[in-house]
Structure formats: C-alpha cells, structure tokens
Length: 50
Image (cartoon, rainbow, N blue to C red; front, side):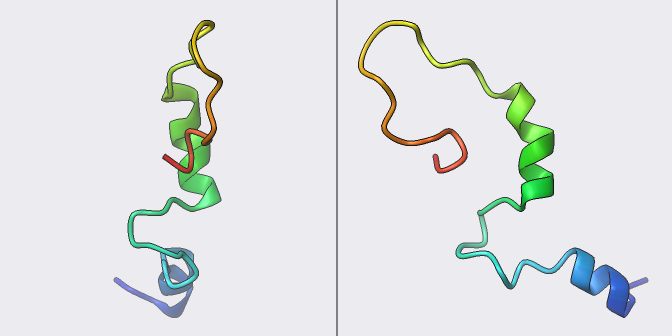
C-alpha cells in the first residue's frame, strides 16, 4: 500500500530524467559495472552518466 512515507521514499521527482538513478540504486549497480579498459583513450564520461 502506498503511504506518504513510501511515496517519498520512491519518488523520482528530483531526478532530471526518468532513467536517472538515485544514489541508492547506483550503489547496488556500481559493483556490477565492468572495469575501464587499460588501453585506449581515457573515458570522458563516468559509467553513471552513461
């Protein structure tokens, strides 16, 4: 059931885009992202921005 507390907890109104992640969501996903390649051009964008 949606209560005022759960609505605030799951609110996405502060995000710029619907697909943006909250800090809590990124904390779950970040360890699963691949390490940057050791060769080639350095990355301009962070994995979170991509």
